[in-house]
Each structure stands twice: as C-alpha cells, then as structure tokens.
Length: 195
Image 1 (cartoon, helix red, strand yellow):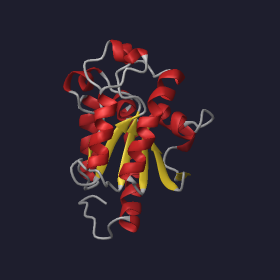
Image 2 (cartoon, one colour):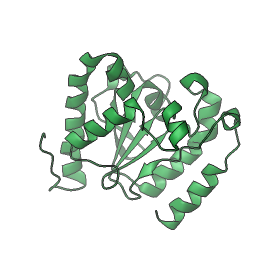
Image 3 (cartoon, one colour):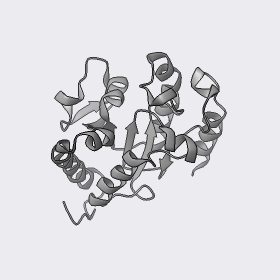
Image 4 (cartoon, helix red, strand yellow):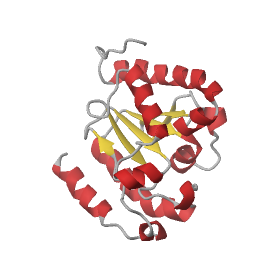
C-alpha cells in the first residue's frame, strides 16, 4: 500500500462521522492493488465483512471472486474493491442518503488515488449514488457509461445473482465486456481462459 493510501486508510478507520460507527465491528476500507486498472464499488459491508474486516467475503464476495477469476482477475493483481459506505448498516439495509453523503468523500479519494481506467458498479445502490438517483440497474446494466472521464460498467450485484440465478448469463456478458475493455485500455496481453 502506498503512503497516500495508507494515510487515507488510517483516517477512514478512525471515522465516527455517522451513526453507523456506533455498532460496527470494523470499518471496511477496501482491498486490492493501489494502481488497479479496475475499481469495483459495492453498496456496503454486510455481516461477514463486518466480522472479518474485509470487503466481499460472504456468499456475495465468494461469487464475485469466482466471476473475477473467470475473467482472469484477482484482488491482488488487477482490482481494488470498495463500497459506497464503509460500515455495515443495521440488518444489512440500504445506506441512507445521509450515510452515503458522509462516506462518499472517502470513496472519491480512493478513486483518485487508485486512478482506475474502469469502474464496475455492483447493483442499484452503487449506481444510484455514483451516477444519480434517476439511474436504474435493470435498464442500464451492461452498457458503458462515463463518470468524470472514466468508463463505468453497471452490473447486477452478486447478491442479486444468488437470489435469482437467471441473471447470471446477462452478468457474464457484462463482465466479458469489461475484459475486452481492460485489454484495450490496460493490458492487451491480459489472459482469461473464458474470454
């Protein structure tokens, strides 16, 4: 972790700016490579993440890791993973606009430091808070968008795939687009056995 990211991590881990700090076990800073070509943004940590102190370690995270592996991506070499909010909302509810507003500067600083070519937005909440409340995941998933001169790919959240496996095929098509774009923008030699 570079010095700027380490300093930011210290600051984020000490945050008490909203009510989510009261009941958390851990602040989930994020994880991955500092100069990742891809930054993945989820909604918020869940129970497993709050216990372990790492992003996307529960069932959704295990599925995300399988998808990334099929794309030839790993957390340690290709991506940085973060969330709209860094602490678990009670009962895994959706973060409120107030909670997101308090936490978003942390995420924006992470994006600035990592400087990814591609953002992957996991699900409706990430899409709404990054792109605006009028955006809909069912309408926009799989279609490239831009945010502050960065390419954005909205996809279904892995939790949605666990609830409705029929979404998996569409999601795989979306991730294939990410692999093609990664080869175009980051590494033309990037290998995936499946794409």
